[in-house]
Amino acid sequence: MAKRCFYEVLGVSRGCPDNEIKAAFRKAAMQYHPDRNPGDKAAEHKFKELNEAYQILSDGQKRAAYDRYGHAAFEPGANGFAAADGFAASMADIFDDLFGDVMGRRTGRGGSSRGSDLRYNLEITLEEAFVGKTANLNLPTAIACPACAGSGAKPGAKPRACPTCAGYGRVRAQQGFFSIERTCPHCHGQGETIDNPCPQCSGSGRVTRERSLAVNVPPGVEDGTRIRLAGEGEAGLRGGPPGDLYIFVSTKPHPFFQRDGADLFCRVPISMVQAALGGEVAVRTLDGGETRVKIPEGTQSGKQFKVKSKGMPVLRSREIGDLYIQVTVETPQNLTKRQRELLTEFDSLSSTHTHPEASGFFTKMKDFFENLGS
Image 1 (cartoon, rainbow, N blue to C red):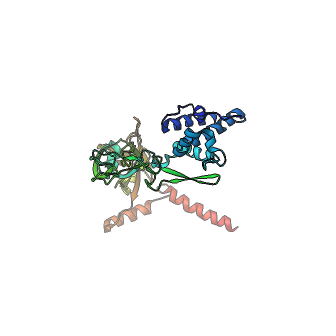
Image 2 (cartoon, rainbow, N blue to C red):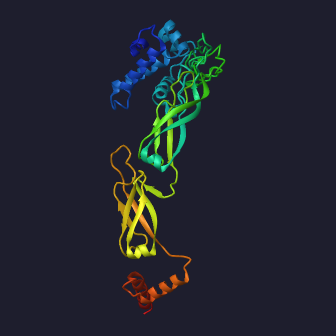
Image 3 (cartoon, helix red, strand yellow):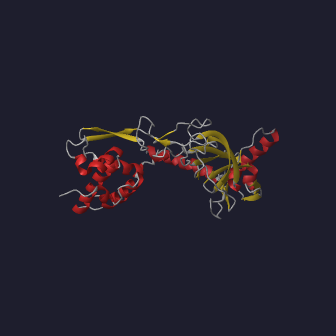
């Protein structure tokens, strides 16, 4: 059976540019790929036919030979060409286009590549996390060269396609039935060469400058939050798209409050007398106000009191967390003689009713070990 014209297989005209051939192959290959058509012999044959056609027409030398001699140029012994490398070479182009942008570092035929992502560590106070803030950052980063507008070429000059790889960025070497593809040694994979590089950026298309940037930190932001600013990273090489800027927010330790999500915790010491007789303590809150907490008579150390809606705002919500006041009973120190006398008198008057937990604890402990030994 006679082979169909390769241009007809791909559905392009004979004089079409290289990018049109590649686009046509990508579209058809995705349609007839065996994984999308399991068990379809017709689709499998069409896919092999597409691979063979693209392998020939995507290569400048092979395309020129095909235009001159037709299919006869690739028969065994004709002009040193062989079509056995079609599948691997052509599919390499497809996978490079579909998956080559991993980590934002893909280099294309135009010589450009995406800029690197940048990270900035921003430390704020708990008060700033409560109300939010606008942070002004000064970032030393690579920006597009203003002299050459990122092209890398001297003003008035233009990059030209690499003569070695014809702008492809890679070259192929035939070894028997195998085709080996490697980075072009002349342009180092850029696909372009610059005869007259820009004097300011030495042909890279970018220069390092300190850039000012205002970043909005929303109220309720938590420690470890990551803020992504698309397109604010390092400028791409030779006019390529910029990377992104990632801002990692951390919160400074607060001298009085500890945060757990949207809730705040505050440890408040009270005197032994306050704990025994009861009373009231005034505690400042992050919103600038003050809340008064009633201490009941006989409060024990470690007791927590909940104050609703006095915690942190919930990010992108109208909800507000709570404030928890934990009291710790402070044992008096540096007692005077009279104070010692009063405490001694108080102790002599104490009973199991005034210290029920202590009395019960030692009784239970004694009973436990006596029963253990019996």
